[in-house]
Length: 156
Image (tube, rainbow, N blue to C red; front, side, top):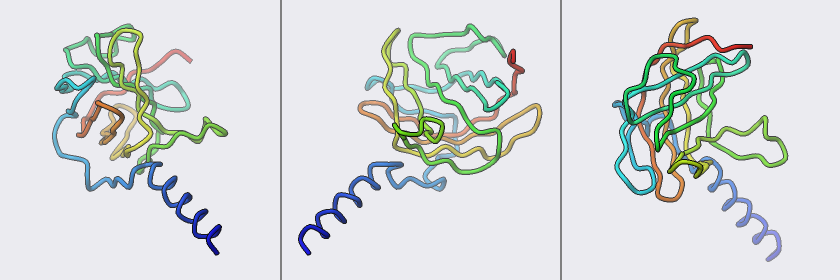
């Protein structure tokens, strides 16, 4: 009986660590903001590219040219999103990377922190625009909010 309780407790702890129990109701109705490397961070621009299978998303704290595939800044938030409206809990599946959904905080040039706790919500999507809400936490990094962006066509 003690072994079963121990396994149950471990399983419950692991489930709580995946996704963190976040819901789309926790996503705030403003431009994505939070902290990156412990410093205040607010999204000013987004580049969303249709790569054929998924959307590739880059969020910046500075203004960048629309559809600029080479845009960059010292800090960014990167993720891919399904091309289908829905709620996608963050999770990292080491045995099934295609089943993973994460958000990467670029905390400095060449330094990344991967968030596997939170939720991504593709609220609406058309051929031209997408609205996404996101909430993620990892170490000294947080992001919460929603944005609408044009969808740029990638090179397939």
